[in-house]
Length: 195
Image (tube, rainbow, N blue to C red; front, side):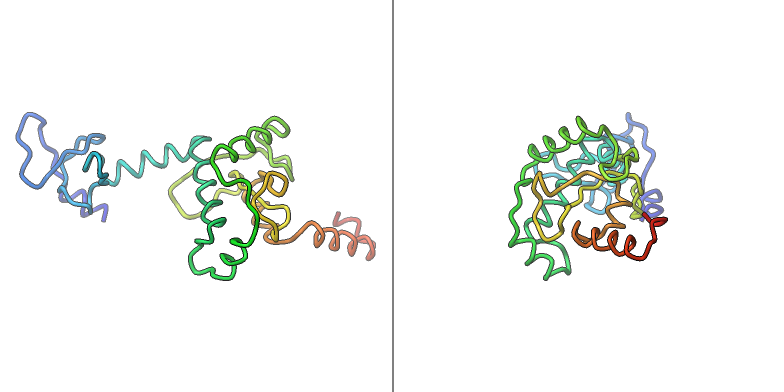
C-alpha cells in the first residue's frame, strides 16, 4: 500500500493548481488521491492528514506518558466492558467483576500514586519502565503494563499495580496464593537457590 501511495502521490508546486480528485496533506505537503484509502477522514474537518502522516503523529503521541496511559486505559476499558475479540468466557467473567478504575481520571490518579511511591519503576522488579510505541506488534519488555494482583478480581486501585510488560506476561493469570504455593514447594524441596 505504501508503494501504491508513493506512485500515485504527486509532488506538486503549491502555486500550481491541484488536479481534481487530489488533496494536499497538511503535514507532508504531498498531493494524494482524495479517497479514504489515502486520507484519514473526520466528520468535522474532512480529510486533513494522509494515513502515513496520521500514523506517524499517533505513534509520537502514544510514546508520551499521557498517550501511553490513554492507550492502556482503552485496553482496560475494553476488558471491563467485555469486548475482547474471540474471548467470550473471559468477557463474561470480566462483566461480573467490580471495576473501580473505570474513568481516565481514576487511572491517572492511580498512576500518580504509583509514581510517588516507586517512581518510574516496576512495583514488582524495580526495573525502570518505558512508554515507547514503535508501530510494530512486538511488545517492548520494559513498557508500562497494568497488572491485576488477583486475576479473579476486577480493575480496582487495591487490585492493580503498574509493572513492566515482560513481568506481567510472565505472571500471566497466577494469583498471589498460587505464587505462595510455588514458593512453599521450593522451600519444602530445599530449593532455596530458586528463591
